[in-house]
Picture 1 (cartoon, protein in one colour):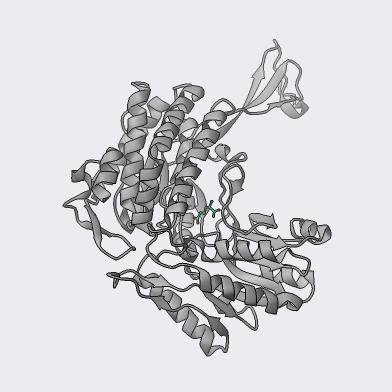
Picture 2: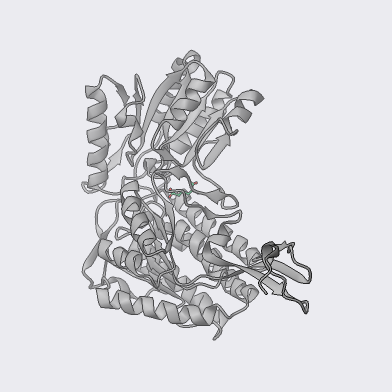
Length: 497
Ligand code: UN1
């Protein structure tokens, strides 16, 4: 199956057979590929080649660069099914979500194509006669992309579609758990490059297969102008200071611990569906997954009854076969979930679900019932992001208290409120409301569209990706002051003669 998918997308068998990095599918733990990891000298050469490619690509006009991204978007449209299915094989998310991830790539390509004609700066009034000031945006350099297993392709595309129209070359170090999808994306981009023609230099985009040390090499190399990294807070804590120490730029998209405030006026039918998708979808392995339900005490029993009913009806099993919940990524993820649930029980919490679900021929597939954990207070366990389908339930009396609970965690990615009270809704999205990068009203915390800037505050890392004015992160800003007079007045009125 894997072979035919890879073949359709133009990946040669030699690229994923006979190497030292073994890739397994979380569906049943079976092997689906063996890839050769890059040595440190190969990474070094790749960086040098990316620098050369950058020098050529930055002089291609931006709308032409956009044309390449348009062609890439076409490839993605043509191969949406194959790539979506490969995402499912490799990271275990259900097919609908695999396809959704590819759609997110297509969407960002569309956005980037339009953006390629809008890389504009300001014109600024000069204090001096016969002078004008403006801002120019120029390509930045080779961009290093480090991505995580749970969204193996979309975050790469958010960064690379924009980085390409902004005139940069790409070095991609995918998660060692999901390198096959990276090879497929690279093959599709290479097809687009071929269609595009000679203006695109060789090595414009390269994939670096490797483990942590390969990523570290990108992080530490001053030739890599920007590191955009998605992953755990632990990873970001190492990457951020290393890039800063060499005055490089970074975009960090790290952990989330996303809450929903459920107010007494909320539409509970809608809220129940939103909770289900955002807490249970992707088996709780999105950075935007709903992890904390902060419910008004007057409706706690009702929402819990509804949720337990919906949770019990959720189908768990092979993600290719129409189930709603697929496997966790691996054994370690399962162990981490179980140990957290055991701690919660020790603390006296009420735990619903959370057991392993055995599937046929699937000893090495780690399927679990999503869990609901009623907590007496927001303690250290709740403040920690466990990358698994655990929904903590906490109660509140007054909105201020709910907002404080929402904000009182180290992470600051996404958040939402369900209410039909406009005062509550507006307070939540105001300066005294949620402290997260994303704050929604009457939709869940996950499933953001690419048009907005995506990312969060505090331990989430502060980076932004995707839409809005994020393109500026992939360019360097230059301030130009041009004197078109015959005089040389100095700024601030200084006389120097
Ligand atoms: C992630 O989990 O790393 O908002 C990204 C969302 C998706 C992206 C999630 N658009 O849930």
